[in-house]
Image (tube, each protein chain N blue to C red):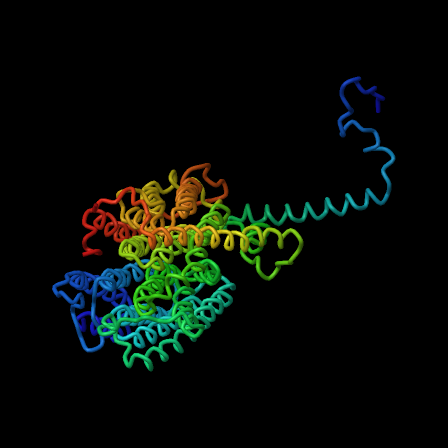
Length: 457
Length: 127
């Protein structure tokens, strides 16, 4: 565990004291090395499910895949940011790299925390680098508004979480996940216990995001630079899912009755946000709303508290992380060329940049959950879980699958096919860096198709 | 100008309407001259940008910028009206309650059957 965390922290002197060009290449190379080493976390050699242990950090079946996803994303974020950061002065470039590395270290600490209070601290701490990235390096004036929405939605949700964790600490004496699983909870259905339930989960639902409290997500994703969008879509949303999987263990019999409003909000939000996607004119906004839709399905799956629900949620979280991040990279390639996020300004890209069209096709097909990719596996497990939960949910999830396919294909056809815009003078050809970036996103997805046991075990 | 009679089944096109050339009031003429002046200055601005040999970037369309900004900033300009309230209720409030009623009755009925032991597990593999 420390084999990966300490090198990540030591990337700070690497960034700060190397010559600038070497800082980028070195950080990316070391990031890839760490990502390769982090694959060891997927090997579970212990019957108690907690492996690679430390006093404060451990890896188990749920945190392993998410940790590997986090470690994999650091080199990808650095690769994606080289384009727009090359025009900035040296200190700001180093500061940006430092933000990415700090975020990475905090996320590793968050996912591997064995104590819920440490998870909460790291959960809050990841807000600061992300806020700095959105408000400082975003591209439009709306980024200030986006940063405010992002910060205050999450903070307002997590204050009840702090109080609830304190209450749990006082009542059970410990918040260590290692021992809490042996503590058989049987919460009575009193008002204060219901408030405890809501307090524990609101922060994580806001982070996921649940449909009613999702307003921060389109703003934050659209205004963030590409590295910010990538880490937000791929990992920070999954922090919410991971937290929910851990905390619902402590809230046992109440979840059956209290989860109804949230499952219903998640499923209805699935349809509503998928429909909004069909009407978007801003490419990043479309991808952001599709993230809300997929995460709504994940929330519904986690709240049903079944094995298949957790499996489907975990698979969809990992697959959606890779797919959404790939789509944001693709949107960024458009943005770097036309400096606009409007979709219609760069139609017919398949004729102009055909190889990028291949990546668009694969990413769009992954987004619409094409078999045999793990997106489909996750969605299918979740749909079946919800069908078992209640037969009528198939109407909502079936309609949502249809609309998901519709908007993914809409996005693909609108950007790739159609008449090429007459006003564009010249577009830069696709850089090798962009090809590498997308290959590194989609290759793990294809590999997971062949061996999904890596994330299930 | 020759005075054409209108054909029985078709009306006179606007460009052949004599009122377009004669009987035009001074006010209408002034307004049309102002509009033509504005159009000419916009066209001059665009053509200057278009034919600038040192231009490397795209010509920015201010109407497009305004449209994109309008589509992105909905919340500050929201005005609760009859139509928006009905839409909000229909798509945001009523479905939630309807779905709650649906799911709750369905699951409670299933729970009753499980408690009575009468649930018919049709596709059960382990029996």
